[in-house]
Amino acid sequence: MLSVNPQTLRKLRRFREIKRGYYSLLCLTSLLVVLALGELLVNSRALIVNYEGSLYFPTYTSFLSGKHFGFDYDYEVNYRDLAAKFELESSSNWVLMPIVPYNAYENHAPEGIFRPNAPSLEQRHFLGTDTTSRDILARLFYGTRIALSFSITFMICVYLIGIAIGCAMGYFGGLFDLMFQRFIEVWSNIPFLYMVIIVFSIIPATFSVPARIALLLTVLVLFSWTSMTYYMRTETYKEKSRDYVAAARVLGASNTRIIFRHILPNVLSTLVTFMPFVVISAITSITALDFLGFGLPPPTPSLGELLKQGTATLRTAPWIVTSAFGTLVIMLTLVTFIGEAVRESFDPKKFTIYR
Image (cartoon, one colour):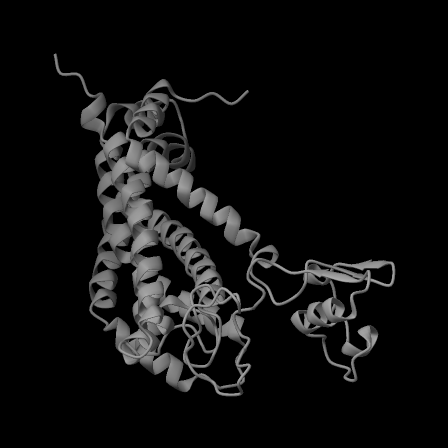
């Protein structure tokens, strides 16, 4: 049966007492759940189509051609047009569309002119459209999902590399520690932005969007693990000199057992406090790179790309920058409140008694 350390329970209770952090965690968790179910809320495909007594569920199935529903084309049917057709026919056929019936890549210009359009309840563009008539809410929705997924993956990779190398440096020391310190000093002085520009200027255009995103994640991780390594090295070096490690050695424990069963559990509780701030740094980094044009490849939805559009059309289409900036502020505020609450609740001074 899984048992939780009483001190950890006190820290968790302390975290719950910090209301801004606790409720921010609930809000962020709810946001992640909503984003995970995004296709049911923001999508140009219908949720359910009832046609001549048969039910279709296009959201998570293969596409249905227009000829299947009486149109004169073979490509995928436009479900908004299909819903309007059924409504005009006054038949028993019907279409259930998501709340936002647009996807993040679709240009919707009924007048044939691609331009930013103000928010419209009639067209169901609740936050308006961008400079190429794509729905802003759809692009914000999927852009936020990509940013959070990217940031969480970034955090996991940075922690795995930083903990592994930093723990080895602090525990074994000697020549291994010295060589890695010199390597990190050199590696940290390589200009990150120049490397991103060089890498993305030489990769071929045939690279798929997932491959380019994976490459961007790899470059970001390669230049972000050093700070976590130094912290882990310091903590491991400090824990290695404590009596419980010496006692474990006397009892015949191997280096692997000492590291994973004794040192890491005493260090990771402190490392938890850095997690939200690593996520924040990843979100701001990917947003800044998107803004500069070196981030996610177009037409991938992103917050930075919307901010870039918004600053260019600040007077003519202020709803673009307002929506993107508001989303970024809300998301960063939630993560910051969580980080402050975690740092305060896991502060060892709160649970230290001096006699």
